[in-house]
Image: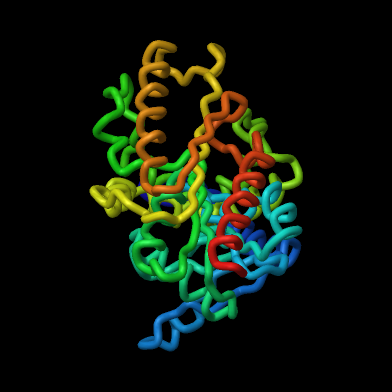
Length: 344
């Protein structure tokens, strides 16, 4: 009996082992092949620490185009798309000034970091990359969503180098406390987070991208193949940032002023259609949340003595997909103000 049980167990485990090995190899070779198929559009800049030979090899992807006395720096929100998300904004801005988009550590073409992704470390990485690439200040910062928080931290750390700012539907340090209590728990469990990482490592997450996904419709089709190619290795970095979401939000809490730097706050106000209301939520709850969001955005516009607040009912949160021209015009206006102020 034991003899037959042993061979039955082996007969069951052997194909399972072969399956998992095949999935691991599929993911391993996919990352090598797709990295060659989709090379970085910009340069890979060394941002490693000086006390470790291994860390000195850590590189950040920085994509800069255009020429000008002012450099616009584009900071994405909390997600895996990185510099790719600015694809409709980047080229038009490069027509009138220098503009740089980049991928934070572990996202898209950038190497992962051994450090926790605190807002200060993110700002330090960006500052190092710009210096290493010879991209000198002054800088105008453009931050979408959580990128608005990261941009504000950068401005606090390097105040003499930042001359203007555009906040694009930016996060607010008090949003968690002031939003109405959510009717459902939005935070994924640690088990789900761990399982997602394992599925990414085994290639299952990559295979799932071949299935129909309604969320993919929000991504411009020319960007989607690259996002799918690098999404599995970006997952870990996005989860690490999400874990520090509360801490990073509060990094700018209580810091009210950006002085008299020219600033524009862009706020998305497109209503959510009834058929797009997330499960467990109600239209009434979303209206209350939207009202609080408008109040928070108005407070952001008070950060500078020279600010404008523009509300768009034609755009959802990902404004760089819905209304890139609105962001481009805002950047153009702020850059022109900076040029006049500094006689550049």
